[in-house]
Length: 396
Image 1 (cartoon, rainbow, N blue to C red):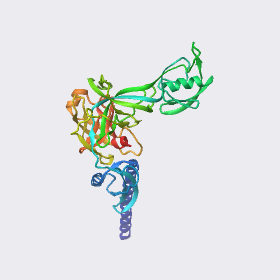
Image 2: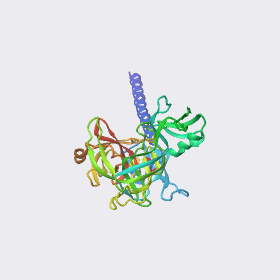
Image 3: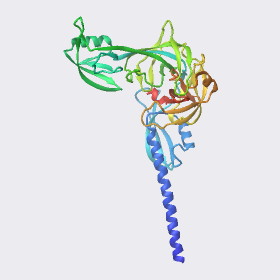
Image 4: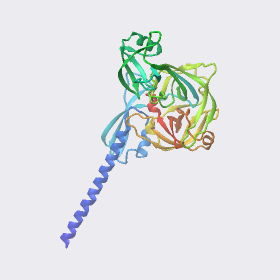
């Protein structure tokens, strides 16, 4: 009986040990999964590291430390660093390269802006019967000639033979086709297409650098409505925009801001980039787009947490903060413009717009006094819920 009892105790002890090893392994695997989802190159400061350790963001077994690196090239205001993830706070298991948040201040946006982009290429808006192109395709090259505008397209077509090799973008992928040209009644060669080389719209300014006037806006790419292509920029302009009215958002019926460019159409600055995370460039004349008294620093995505935050918008006619609740902050290894999920909690905004509406894209999201992101999309079936992009991605 004694031998049997000892045997049972050994079995029990073995099972308990196996259970704790299993729990340990599962915990480590979950932590590794979170770390691998985080990616690299994002903004961070020591406070973010402190909060991550306090909240056990990567599990109770993982501790983070931040090591600065000496930067000899590039922007002196940007300090590279690395986060070291340590098992039990002792054993290094992974290092991730990051950028230190500097002390620079940024004017907080929140005002609507008019946007005009000259596309680097020719955008198909119509076609003759039997054409191989779709509305929204962007023609970028004919034979060996790069197309940057409609004049380039016309000249290239006249110089080509009966058959032309055309390169174009469709759903952001490059394709190539051999196209037969046609002659019109005047003997000039045509592709049988109606095209344009510019797009315009309305968005919201997110931030402006107090130091050099560089800005970020919109939070998502400007795309051609027909083809869904991210419009490549030849050049572009930002204009002051006036709010004319609001179409209130409802379930399955997104609302929108109705805006008009200033009658004088005084350009405020340039658009040099159009990416998945919005437009950017430099504002030369931002006086009536910014509030000199409303400034904030940038916040990295490691410091974004579920809970209270605000968005800044001028939908009421003046720049105001509206309460939201961040209900999800995704770890992201690859870039995405749906980083943050939030819900509008402010009754003033819900009464005014129904929640998030088209034209509010780019409205800055602030948490703990820092700009951490921008509004990008609304939930079609619930206008009080929306997506936001981390400001990390916008600044890249």
